[in-house]
Image 1 (cartoon, rainbow, N blue to C red):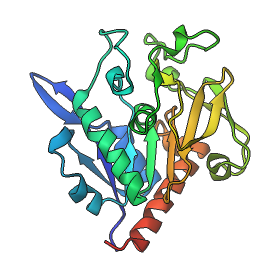
Image 2 (image 1 turned 30 degrees about the vertical axis):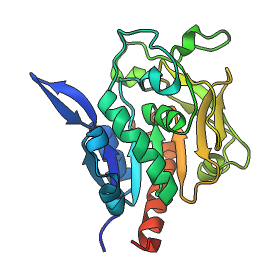
Image 3 (image 1 turned 60 degrees about the horizontal axis):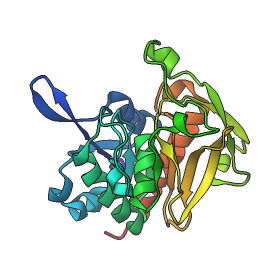
Length: 252
């Protein structure tokens, strides 16, 4: 019996002198080792993407983090800092993919940029600079630190009692997470339910309330050193179980 197939949408980045479709190793490994599914990297082709063909193959979707930001024009704002990286091809691929996947009930796990993409795809908005918002903490990583220190757990998130995330994490009421993002969720999209907040009130996890499949988004990076973090491993295992259930019950 084949493993569930999990689509991993690529970013567009320069590799040498040429643009390339890229996906970081740690996300692909999280699908293979944590969720125990078969990762399938899909190119960021925007409107040229055959979404129905891809979703006919998919048993799940993992939306990765990225250094790039979701374009502010997609939620009705001007870009405040043009020096920050954007990825229009990824935006044009993931946003329609998200809406189509949720409509089909395909399991979805969204991480960091992916967390922001789902909110924008469903009609929400973002803070373009969380650290500039009164009362908010600075959630960015320190660029001068080693990768180990950048990805180390640095603040807690408080889980909603009885929520999907709390149940997935064996009834925990809080966990420690890493923090490597300058942007963050501002207005929650209609139909989303908060699953966790940071101490400053920033939403750190949510689910799609009426989705027929597993649909969870987190602002932190559970894929980092996944096998050494029991909370992260439980999250990826729950996603993988949802993908297996979808595969076994799908009718197409």
